Image 1: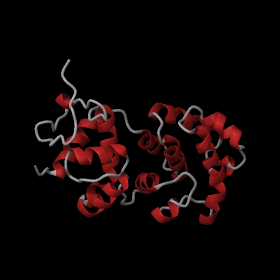
Image 2: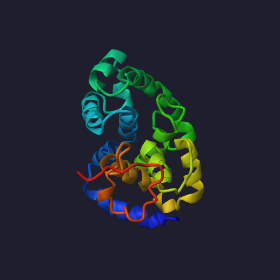
Image 3: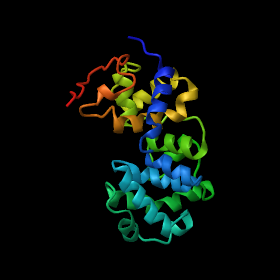
Length: 218
């Protein structure tokens, strides 16, 4: 089965409009600060959105920029961001972030190859920051994007990095920046990793549903 990827994306864009907005998009809606978007993205890894949102709020109240963040000790940062996942490691990343940004005149860079040199920043985070903070073309592939693209059979890949590489060649560029926000919301709300709720999915009739076991109606 060959899917119409643009049609799927447009349908799901309307579907998730009423869903909870992913936390990084929420932060971006409140501020255009690349620094805050970068920090929120680092905090969000393996952490529920509501926990990330509260931790970001507490941290930004004390340290809204790199200069103020540099005045905090690792222990102070830990206290502010707890209970995000791996909060001790993330506090270490944030402690070292201001120094790392000095290589870019104190600013958050917008190139992937520069972003991935920052502490706590991998390709997923770098792509998300480039797309959300700078509105530049980037494909952020997290577990939801990787998983759903394989469920649709649009890619046949083993890792998020492999999925990103395939999507860069295949996905129309107009969808690059938006695909993460749409599929993260959809993956959290309907197309869940365990027992996806297929019966309430607007593309159920057309979805190849590769490798999944849908949840039964109760």
